Image (cartoon, rainbow, N blue to C red; front, top):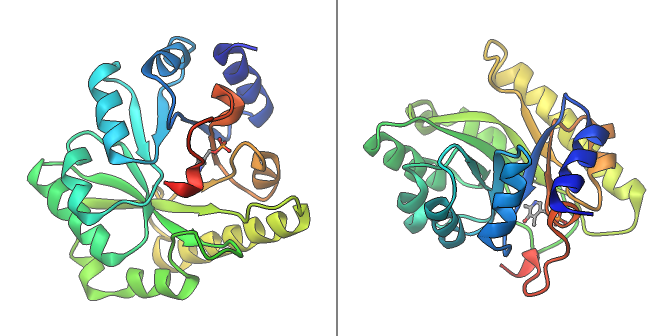
Length: 228
Ligand SMILES: *Cc1c(COP(=O)(O)O)cnc(C)c1O
């Protein structure tokens, strides 16, 4: 199946209430162009360098989402154009994003990345840390970032029950956070969970944005995302 076919069948399968983010890390610009020509506009990258390179080569109406760990010293390179930063995992990072957004006269959409997996290697805020961030005095002063929701990565396992439980917990947390901190804010609306191996389980548990790479573009040969 072609990239265009893969996107078409994914969209049909996930339905209109779920946004499809095409995760294009490690793939050449030509592959992204093919997806673009099939109507795809949202692309996810996990490194700043790759995102900047592709941004320069590809059509300017693409919406770029950063989904990998972001170092504070690299925020400045993507602040002028990034559409959403899904991997916010500290107040310090959010502060830095705010600073560069302000410099470029933008308000940058962000998701808080919540740690839900039973693995040591994954970045993210714990439930308590996310609440602490939202309650902090400093957060209240950050006018150039816009928290649109939460993102999570489930454990890399064949155990469907475990994955389902982790996504269920994140959805429950999302609903609680919305109720407590964003009740009157309609734009707190994005729950990004699910990738190629588990997007069906994620949607079943309430995801409204899936981040799908290999099912669209084929397997990544060189690097595994966990090693980036
Ligand atoms: C790579 C990556 C994905 C997509 O993974 P696939 O298994 O190729 O669909 C989704 N989310 C994050 C955070 C990633 O790094």
